[in-house]
Length: 153
Image (cartoon, rainbow, N blue to C red; front, side):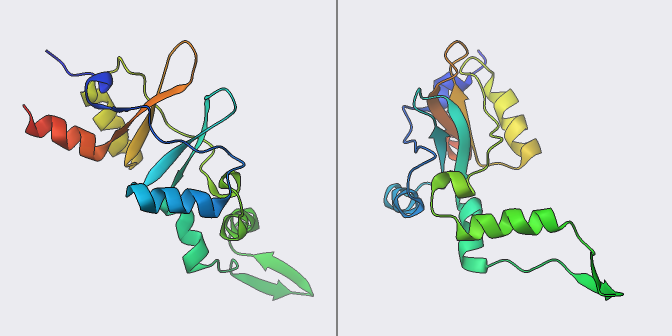
């Protein structure tokens, strides 16, 4: 029998809201030894994900894009909008400031194989599991969950 996401996910995951102070989210990640959290709105619907990767800007800092000066004009050699987004993340004070706002999610009835393929293709370590009817977060599937499921076979 094919295992589904619901068979191995962690139900009722810890979540944060967009307005949660960033330091509180960092403490939650550290205390629970997890690498990311689903971000939900007032109704429990998924609006983003905050991960360790999103927080790295605070430590590494942001470098301005390379540019050249030509006749008193600045010509950027890379998109300056990307720099502005990175700077916003580095200076962020709330979860909303630094979260990834285009989260990838799965449904509980999807096969574990499909979810694993999606994680591999998108190079992500965790997937929020969203109820089809309500669009609320009901679980989280991590790479560790998949490995444990493989070990139990």
